[in-house]
Length: 403
Length: 224
Ligand SMILES: Nc1ncnc2c1ncn2[C@@H]1O[C@H](COP(=O)(O)OP(=O)(O)OP(=O)(O)O)[C@@H](O)[C@H]1O
Ligand SMILES: [Mg+2]
Image (tube, rainbow over all chains, first blue to last red):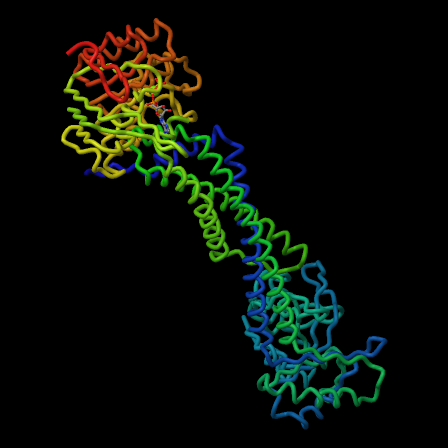
């Protein structure tokens, strides 16, 4: 027997001819699948986005970073070099690096334009806390602090925004009323700018780093600052160190100040747990929407089979086998699913972007998001077409023709 | 060409069994033009459905060109319907969303003909039945006589050995029905075997042999 089975085009072409005539039926099916797929696409994009943000944040912050903030009620820095010495004495072996930080905003003047920039006055240890990579030049060194060198290191984005290049070492830059020599530019980092229940992540790429002694006009052993970044040798040391830290920072001369200790890793974990819950919840909702969509498509296809009984009888009479009829209805279902899936994917993309900007949630569209959308659409198409297709094929040709 | 021996066919409805064909036998030779007449409900369509391999008899034997139909599966029967048989139904049945060439080419769809070749052949056939000027029309836009001509074009698509027509002129006026009968005559003259069911005496007269269905059996009525 020669191969006489119809090719795929011979199925697709009449399907489109039919939908041209039965537009409402086609649109209902497409909408049913599209809405279901859209939900899944948004949930997957959100899940992937959250996961990516989490791993990037961990990549920069590590699990072993502790950030101490302390300011008095009138906004004055409450941490000082003395505390650094005691900390070193108490737990020097457990600490990998310890960087004092004081923020300040200034105007950077360049080519007659000025731009507001975030200045981070710190020490060479800042680089070790965040394992920063250098794109060109070098980072701050102990020498710069001891000798109060007017030097600056640019975060990757601030270099790009001010100079549109990272090759700017040796150039002069006016920050406020002072001139600084640029000695280096950081490599691009992937730390997402994210808020963790009130705590703002250090915006590494958008900052400019200068020796702390230049800003406070004091000697190395007489620093005053409001933030201290601590990097422990490993995260196991953090629980035991917490009471010690409280003692060192709490026993200051000023008892009025506000002391805050942040372990970014814990905040990240909390945020992740919240996102996981949200994901499960949204996945549930999407499944319900998809189920309703499938039921809708199933219904439309059943009605279609019923109104096309004589077509089915005719096709059987002129040579269609049962499996030809099954194929025809399955291909119609899958085609609707592919179209609905594509629409759902695009709609999910748009919705994802809106969700991302409204609720400040990260979303990620990549091959996994797209393939999930198509797999869900195909499954929906197959699930909703199978029963109507079998029903159509099981129609007795004589009965089908009598209708 | 067709050899039917003592076939029985009954329908089982809830609570009752209707026996329609009783030990019916029939021989049809190549090139025959056979008409079957008889009152309504006597089983003419039932017999034609069996001859058309759309249904299987309860017992007896049916041999169509060396094929023992009662022993064949769905796939093989579909192949026979596709290659050897052409149908013209009493009521006009079309795929309403496809234009005339696509409708006529449906048998080609199941014999693996390409869509393009199918349309070419269908257009040729539509011209033959005098509908060359209606190629872009949908079936719903045709009159009864035109519809039956399209149905004949479709039945001829895969060059069948036998044409089975169930009251093709049932819904037509005299002029249209004469036209269809002339068309069938012409096809028979070219060698096509035809089995025709009709209530119309004048239509039946076109056939070489006329049978009457009575009590589940065929009675030879006229011709040899
Ligand atoms: N699928 C079926 N299920 C039950 N009964 C059926 C079925 N098909 C036909 N019958 C019955 O079988 C008998 C013969 O039907 P058939 O359609 O063969 O008659 P017919 O001779 O073609 O009549 P008509 O001239 O009106 O077309 C009728 O009584 C009909 O009700
Ligand atoms: Mg009948």
